[in-house]
Length: 499
Image 1: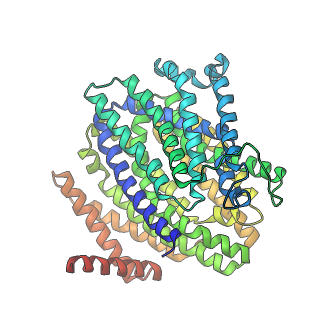
Image 2: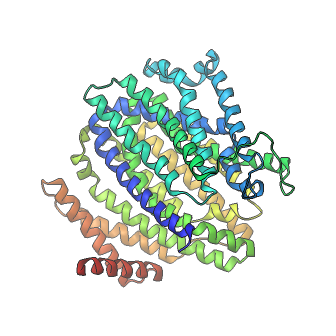
Image 3: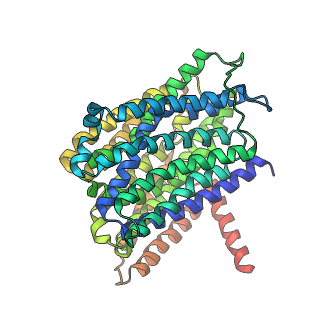
């Protein structure tokens, strides 16, 4: 077993543990120990930092991944690490100056200050937050080049999910006040950066030189253009993921952001299987596009759509059948129940994304890679204006509809581009069968009367849906790959029971 495979298996385990901890934290810890306004305030800080970070690290994480093989000769990296750090420091210095300019504060922070005057006290801490996020990303991508992803994943994925709940518990029991909680939270990302730098030293890969020797295969112009494209792609991606929360805080309130965040987390679980499939498909698409094997790409395109939509509908319908009971179990569930209305809409946006499969990857590894940047920036702009108008008109559900419309337009445009350039499309009848089976089955199970015990309802309705959905999928032979997955899962369960 090679190091890549071992690291991949370990990373999957870390991601699974992190997801479970994140779910428990979001559904039970944060709703118990924080008011919705306090949760919304912290979420807004993080979203603001995430959106500003690309302006600070100036594409250094992307450059770290793409150009490391050219700079490194095994013994030294010819000033590559210095280049990455210099980019981060330059961006951090610029933001430090801008952050304290009154016009900048009025333009970007005034809505949050009106909502909670304490935000003014947090402004001096924003450079720490943003720089921590920036250098966390830089050193994470740098260390991954050495095929050591597990420890960085633990640092990034688990530190925050362990430290933040401890801060919330400390706040609840009055060991610290909310101001201290907010300020301590900012330093988590700086702590992650220090841990990653320490791990880099431990690997013996902190090879620092002030002299940058550009390899002959790489021109400065090429790197600059790649950095510019990566910057806009990253900014567009973050705008898509964070702009709704920032605009809800600015237009509505921090409390509404807190409510939105809980339901958004539940809805985002629906997309997890699809994202895992996309990660698996990425190197395959890259290789087949290199060989220009369109038949193989078409097969991956369609299989990923079918399997992804099948797994997505399994979770989607399971969530819709049990979500009311989940909120009954949740501390302060009645406070956050107003966010339930966004789950079907956000879930539908995740389904659309999975149905259109690996269209971004096909474009990315073709000669038309620049189309991805254009489409992501376009999506970010569309998402901004839709959120601006829909949140003001419809509230939380407006943000959800803005996401669904943006994601649908985004995927249709990329799907049409791929069909026009390569003659490929991801759909077949099996995808439709999967959706119809899941919706019909969920509709039938939903009429089963509920008991007065929420946990029992979750097990009855959720469990019955999963069993019948798997049985129907297997009997109808929706996909050979799905049947093999079901058979192997049953074999593993039998093996555990025999043990």
